[in-house]
Image 1: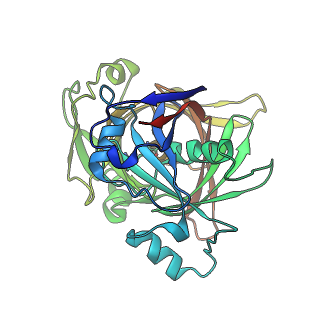
Image 2: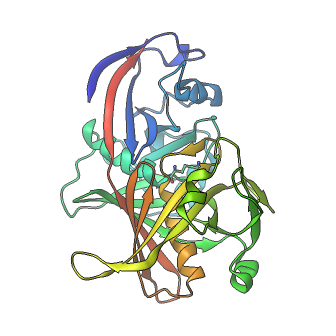
Length: 329
Ligand SMILES: N[C@@H](CCC[C@H](N)C(=O)O)C(=O)O
């Protein structure tokens, strides 16, 4: 990691002068990270956009502010979660860290799977938390409480359960919308899945079509879910399922993504979970619980565990890296 880089002349960032930022990525999904232990740096959309600008700023798909939950002011979702769940406590001595994630255009998103891995790595590097092997780190997000643990490939996150955005339509047709994208000859059926944030997953027949997509242009989804959507294009491997080194069945898909509020990114963790969930629905087979999702920035692993009520918990695992740390001047 490069140390003590100084970023000059970032427009609209005067209020942030002097603060220390870190650039991180998780399978190429990159973030500008900042620690705000006293809750003094509530970010405005234009500041986020300036930090994420790849020419005039530091550059990133999003910004992540680490702030103790009891120091978050003016975020209705955090106040509600703290008020509704007496077990969610955050104090100066034992802070519950809130991941204040913003997309590169300044918009707020409920959840970022790759972001949680980068967040945990950042908190540890900044000495704000200690996380030993086997221990679980709770992280508060706008989509609820998540937990992180160290694994050999980096970090694994308990992502909560996946769900259909439109359960009625999805369960009857295994698709609920149509997607048209630059590079596709016709609209394709798609399935919309929530991982706390919205995703619309489209299956393609082969990798040439996947590689030929122009995701600089935003895909059009009809009907678009109520709060917009991230769009994942997937090509299931052939054969879909193979065995890993331990002899366990593993499903495999390739994915590219156009993210809401960002554009094409090299990886999307919640998107990888949604993609694997959609492929299992299309295959009408939930017996394979481990999935490798190949993205332009690397590979993540998604695991499903059934609950007694039939819902499925999702775990996302993959690496996280810190690339530089410096001061905004
Ligand atoms: N890249 C993230 C998702 C970030 C939020 C997304 N753009 C949205 O608006 O929902 C991930 O790794 O999950």
